Length: 153
Image 1: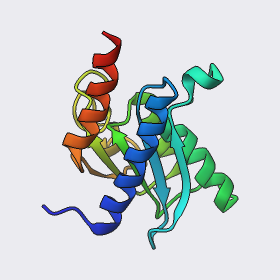
Image 2 (image 1 turned 180 degrees about the horizontal axis):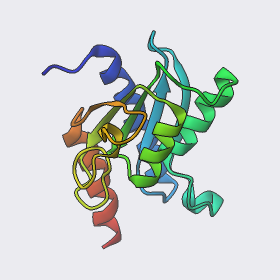
Image 3 (image 1 turned 180 degrees about the vertical axis):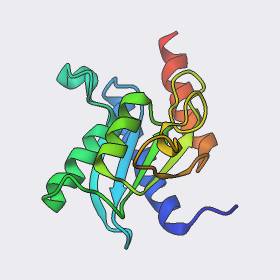
Image 4 (image 1 turned 30 degrees about the vertical axis):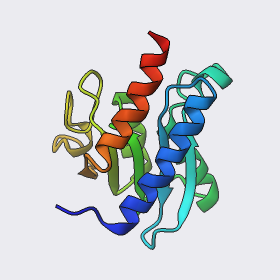
């Protein structure tokens, strides 16, 4: 299935944010929240090392920025685009914020919660679900992560 142009554009920006995270010594993950028209509402990159905040994942940073931009925690109708499949914590925050769609690049076979290890975002037992599109620019997203970790081994 071809990638929608708006998803591809958001992923390109998320990859740039992941590069910024890598340059700062953070695990290279970037995220962008867009509204239904494709307008960027919030961006984020991993900030755990810089802020000493264990919750400062790219998704959380982007969700907070988007909520501040809208003046509301409710991000219904929005899309979160992130370079790596969200973890359990981020999947919970995504559902709490009512994000409608999640687009991600690389699958996380160790901690992913959007279809690989867990499928929290589409769990029918929960009162809220999100559409999930995985594998967008996956090779590029994997390469950013691989390069980062190879340099540290």
